[in-house]
Image 1 (cartoon, rainbow, N blue to C red):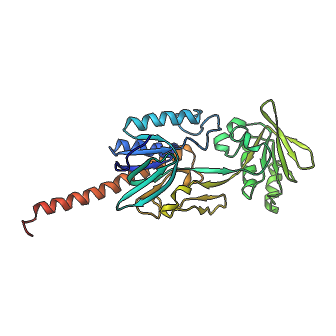
Image 2 (image 1 turned 120 degrees about the vertical axis):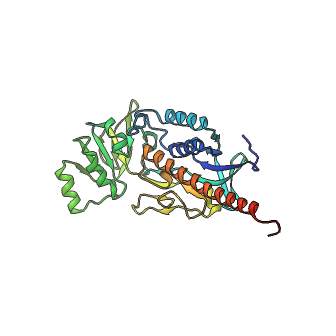
Image 3 (image 1 turned 45 degrees about the vertical axis):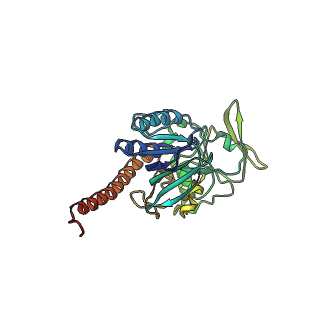
Length: 325
């Protein structure tokens, strides 16, 4: 689809996940002209279901987005398939984005909801099981693997916490140090107190049998049976397209990856540009991303209203001014 860049939308939204679509719905309900661009690559696509989302628990990621798109479009939002490859402009003249097919869009305000990408450890077979029986969040997936033999793949200092946390869902937990984790004396005591097995050495591969995870293979060593494997990936904010606006990712204080810094309402360092969802909040689950994006949409609407009000007051005063004044 090609749009004339002379069409000035109130708000451009880049990213059609829960955050972007929630904002589009709220802005549409506020009678704002909205164009949303989505590349069709949701981060949670491999997962069987979305959990912890009140009233939608267990719905497939694609199913949730289909419902959300229908709702947003019902309020007039235009949802476009494509990838934004460049962005520019500013508050005075409006923001413009260019899609990979050459389409150009322009808006008075810009909302970035592009999310994150996951960087997994270099373990053979791991990516293929990601979102299925290779997991990261106990609150998203712990119930589904309760009482199973669960392994924790060491990938940083947070791995010990993951092992202790997943112990709530199963009594059979194994922490694989993977040459990346060195528990402190206090952490070793905690792991022992909770009955968590600790295995040293580098993890070489995951083993699968009949499309189910069977175990973890250690380099030069045995295979350890597990039914689910937990890994905390490093995550990276999807911001390459916004270099023209001088927006770049920052290292997250947790050390878990990168994100886009914003204020409490989602405002970035660039006036007129906001961000919502995981691109600015690494810990946000789907429901939280949708909720915070709805509030950010309210803030954007109010920002637009203030600009419009100022223009109307100025026009009103000029109309009342004596001729020649």
